[in-house]
Image (cartoon, rainbow, N blue to C red; front, side):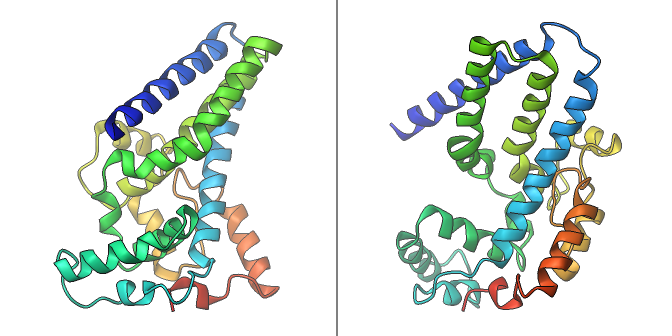
Length: 236
């Protein structure tokens, strides 16, 4: 049953995105090119803003997350698995994501080993599928211009696969298209992303990194005003 629901969600999202593509290519407009780039930039910006928020939002206390985070034994042991299941059962979806982002920092390669659906499933269900369906309605009911559909399409694609792109930065074995997009500067390189892990105070965007100069200024300004305290980086 669960697999059937997942398949239905994927199919619906695929059909919805196909409609968006049809709306984008139905009539060529030179504005489509800057719109495509603007959509990709906005997806990168959103990946950075979410990453910044998740990194520094404190985890809930009293739920054993600190024991999981600093666990010294094997994370494949029955003891760890049982503790993990008990702790996760007490968290809401947002709290699980917050913990996941923090747990990624000392164990970055774990992100690259996750399945595609685990990386993008929650994003599709909570964000990009509803927005894609609204974009479909906007085109069908109000005849949105093709350039706007093009920008919305790349924003949705970049947003949907943001965590997948993040995962590719933490593994060497990636599809050819990832390497091609890196060469075209449409995706960032592992070396560029390493700057984030070195300090946890810069370069939060993980798609192409185009928005990092802007977000770095936002982060520094917020820090000077007392936001993003280091205490939020780890469960306690």
